[in-house]
Length: 223
Ligand SMILES: [Mg+2]
Image (cartoon, rainbow, N blue to C red; front, side, top):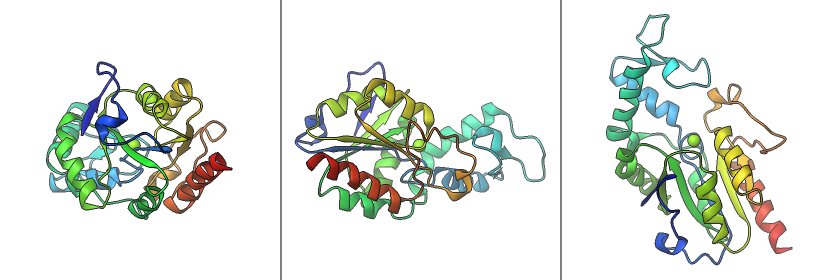
């Protein structure tokens, strides 16, 4: 487990236990491998609050039951930090994600690149392990393009980047245009609300289609 941020030098694949002699998949966690909003919603329920899936936003969706105005953003932020400290290991898994990664791991190295507060590290690592996704874990802060570029430059063969957030996908397009990008949104309730740029980053919701598309990138490279 390693931290990355604009202030840290990007990690070497060898320090992550990877030889760098295969294609590389760089995979996000929240709303890609895990249902973050659902996990956070369950946590908030235990705090007497409710998450409404009204828009593609976070703190603006947290309400006291029966209220029309969301709770203040600072309180939302405090719950967010507490969720990552106390409850991030209980998040539901995205359908088919662990199985798809297990199959893809026969052909490519996998690095989990997640933007999360530092206190999430242990819980997140536990969650990944429990669900059969014990791949090298990088906790990042900031846009993901620079670290994805540094990782991809060390790999042999194609690299693929998967995330739900357009700013991260844009950042990878800018810093590492040769890296194949796919957007996916794991929670069906968020799909219609999530911003997309399908001309730039193909959008594939659901791991069946995503696995097929990633396999297509790997196949094209060996042709
Ligand atoms: Mg995410």
